[in-house]
Image (tube, rainbow, N blue to C red):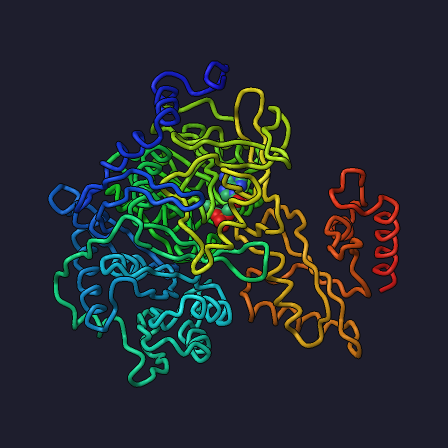
Length: 640
Ligand code: PRX
């Protein structure tokens, strides 16, 4: 049905998609031959819904695939990472040099007791030691769990507790807008409540004169540890389904979900999607501006570019510091060819106009990418013209922490289709996308529905850490045989997919995924808050912003001091990214008879847009009741 339509991929690309869906296992087995294996798999897919084991019987290692496998080719002396920080400090690591440091660290970690299956936490800023640590752990078969270095000590402690990790790798300081952030102090606070941690490895990167406290017997400097390491350590031959990492992401309950990714299937997916989406020439330099603390960085700063032998540029710093020209200056100086960033960053730059951009020669750019949230068509146009000089295709890549890699995107590596600003175009080969209604039935083209994936793919999460039940419930129980992505989407008359944002109670603030429940539970954990409800409201730069409604406990009165206390509390419990833009103290929260918060009313109050058409509300509450509650709330808020 699909392929005959006007804009659908044609020619070789259409054949590839067709072949992939007709014989997915044969297709993925073919793709799997593009990464190195110590032992070939016996079975391409063992699918016991909802648990997929890809390339069963196969043995591989991610560090081997990313490093050793390149040493016999000209990639050996090719740059793996150019790195630069805000101060202009630089470091360049060839594939050989990266391999050498990874081996030395892996060997030293082995001597320190890390072995296959041990989970090790990483809380590091964007420094080369971060990919080195990931790859060293992968070499030992020890899954890493990275916590974004902007998260608070409490968020770090929660994740350490969930994994039961014995080791943490951190740094003395992080760097943000010219200031050193005391990461070790934050890590120490977290470790105080995590008795499982026995060793803390500390990378020194702060100013030489600033010492940090080191606990005797527990803490060791990374560079001292390296000195113990041998020059080479055999990579552990791990089963394809051996976990490569656990990465926590927000869901609809207060507790973040520990997404578990495999080694074999994930690496195959890294290799294939990187080729299809970014189509890098061997000499190209690629820059993904994400932080490695998020999935975009895991996959498209570390594993995918390295397994593909690509040269990446890695930057530690903010886009607008010390000036709004910083990124353009870097693109010019490093001759970046592929640039992959977020709509939030683009919207921020747009406000400053094109002058800061015109001062720089961006003609090295060949391909532009976008990720993390829907890109508004006008932002897409601006990206295409102002940054890409109308020469570079834009790959709008839709995916999730759970999917491991891109599922929906233009694929220049397969054959470029005409692009439509704001549409992620088509699923990649082998990805079977559906858009369904509440009952799981496909909706008509042009009608909004829930995005589902109708068969497993190699990069798919394997489970939630120690919670297979929640994994099954969240992703596979609403509709039989379909992975529920949690997003709304529309397929237009020409088959293009338009991703419309989350269909559940998670927010995307500046591209960061946050659960409303997570912020609410942080709020109510403060002694003066009785109840809290969070909604996302549109924001011109960040896409969405957080608005919090809180009922104070008896004996507390609304005041600027309490508002600040509440903000600070959320900052301490989760991190700066979760701090609400607005806090409203209210006497009650609008709820349905069954006790569900009527978020739509709160949204209307927060945006001041009025309640609009309420006849389409899904819950059983009467229209009258909603209108009445809305008016009551509005009057209540107006009194203050
Ligand atoms: O809502 C979708 C949005 O980001 C969500 C996944 O967030 P996270 O797990 O943090 O991963 C982000 C980076 C891969 C999705 O459910 N999203 C991601 N990319 C796009 C997008 N929404 C629209 N268009 C995109 N290109």
